Length: 329
Image 1 (cartoon, rainbow, N blue to C red):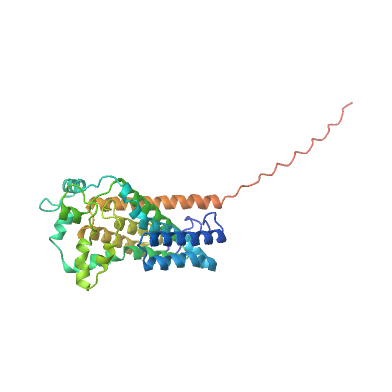
Image 2 (image 1 turned 45 degrees about the vertical axis):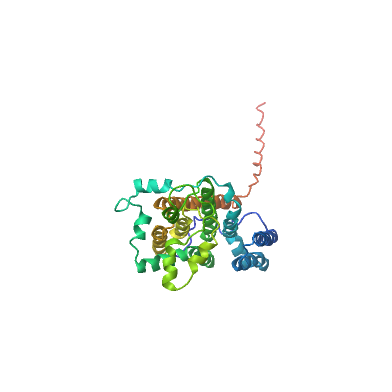
């Protein structure tokens, strides 16, 4: 298979859903205004909110490729809005699990010395690894955005597969945070496995070493805005690179190898930087695969439906009357 040719068996590029251009543009404006208003009322409106929401609200009115891009990328915007809305849902989550995952880690994935891998790596740090894992952890969302733009520029139907998989995987992760809120390794190391402190400030943990190396406060600032400190299971850091790998898999080894290598790097970084247990990463990979499968199946079904209009069946022509037999009389 040639790496740059979209497969003919993929989702039809025209399968974009039932909304017309004008209706979608109105929807985009309404969604952007609603999100900006909610963030402003909650006191957490940021510059990136304004920039993204203004683009989402205005680009569809230009029509053409601008409309096509926003329509295709809209699922990713929906996840971003849902992620921001976590802060309003944390009161609905169940009891926070602080020691469960570490106990399972010690049983199933023990590190040398009978400790867990996040604990082991905190005593075996290395500056080059701090830099590499920090760069990876800082760019995991950028990878999704860049690959979405590349696939859109190539007019690949996998652009929409990627954005819908991003949404599905993200929603599965958010549901997991509500159903099984779990403390990350840095919290258990600092506070122990006892009852969780719901007011704890989220920490950048091992990623602070990256901040120190490069002389910036990127991770410190990023995690200070985290709306949920107990969002370890599953790891969406691990899930989203899997979503990207799935989206580009059919394009050949030139795409597969870098995407898969990046996914491995992020999975390792999540553990090395003390943000996730091995189990969180395994669950994140599963969520990424599940979200991708859901997106692929849903878009294929939508494409098949739009490509299969009802066919009117014309009545069969009437058989000619048989010729009258001549009378022998």
